[in-house]
Structure formats: C-alpha cells, structure tokens
Length: 240
Ligand SMILES: [Zn+2]
Image (cartoon, rainbow, N blue to C red; front, side, top):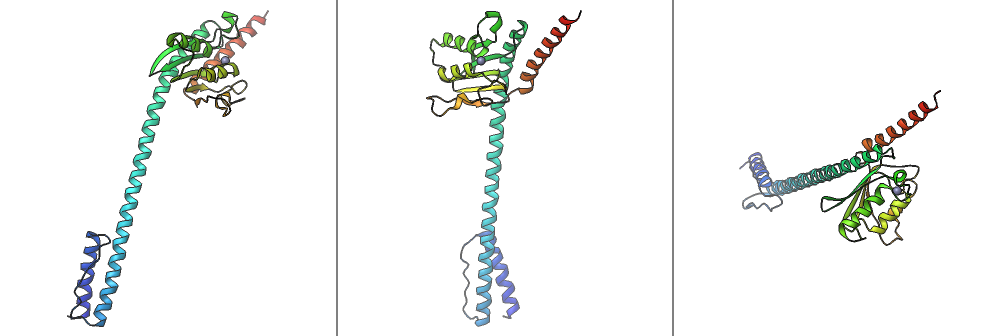
C-alpha cells in the first residue's frame, strides 16, 4: 500500500468518524504498517479528535444560543402580556379621572384590583368634598376596605393616573397594597420616586412594588389639558 493511498483512506475514515461520533476514540489496526504510516495515522487520529471536539463545541454553542433566544422571546411575551393587563386597568383609572374632570377637579383617577378584578374605584374630589383627604387613592382605598371588610389590602394592585403624594403613598404602605401602577410621574409632589420614594423605604415593615409609565401620555395629557383650560378660563374672565 503506498503512503498517499493510506493517507487518503485514513483521512476519509477519520472525517466520517468525527462527524458521526464526536469525541469517541478511533481505532485502526496498525499491523503491518511501517513507522511513517504509524506517524501519519497518529497525526490523523489527532486531527479527527480535534474536528470532533470542534463539532461538539459548535453544537453546544448553537444549543446555548437557541436556549437564550427562546428565553428572551418568552420574557418579551410575558412582559407584553403584563403590560396589556396594566393598560386595561389604567384605562379604568382614566375613566375615574374623567369623573373628576367633570367636577372641575384635577383629573386623577384610581382603581384597585384583586385577582384580576376591579374591587374599588376612586377619583379626586378634594374641592367638591372640601376635604384634604379626598384624593383618588384614599377614596379607592376606603372603597376597597369596605368591599373586603378589612383594612389590609394584601394581594391588591392599585392603579393611579398620577404618581401618589406623600399622604397617599403613606396610606398605600399602611394598607399593605402589593403593587402600585402609575400612569405619569409628578416631579413636584410625587412620593413614588420623584420627590421621595416613601413606598420602598427598607426601614418600614412593608415595601410596595412600583411600575411606572403605563399609558403615560394619556394620563399626563389629561392633566395638562385640564390646566390649560383652567388658564384660558381665567384669562377669559379677566377680559373686560
Ligand atoms: Zn394623594
């Protein structure tokens, strides 16, 4: 058997073996081979091992990439699902805010949800009731406690169109609400991260999960339109 022929035969066997059984030892009978043939055989076995390892590594990397891509897609799908639930309840909070607007109150609305159902609603009635306590959140908390017959609102999520003030943030912590979902932030008075974050003070015995920016544009434009109208009404009343 000439050297060239042996090389070709060994190479093709080694490649075949590499693609079939990654990492397995390849056995050849070396009987009747001279030193040169054996050296060539050893070199080809090493090459086949390297090729097998490379194939194995590539397959592992491909599977890892696929797993990561699947996990990313699943997380995206879950987030979209959660967001769509949040938007549905925020729309209900916006309807409450419209009730405040109809009374010429700052349009802030709130709903409280338990087990995917609205159990309480509230809107800002501070001027109508001539009462500092009549904020949307406090009215909704009162309504929820009445519905559940308990001051503890564990397992509840509160949806509010504007970031809660210090009074409402305090009441939310006191009522042990699990999560607050906020439409738009209130940089001048908000206490869910703007001026303060009273809902996540580690020293308190209860912290609230906060989700921000749900239907943000609709919530903020409702309030800015309200103040624009108020300004133009005032300007009109000053006209001779
Ligand atoms: Zn408030």
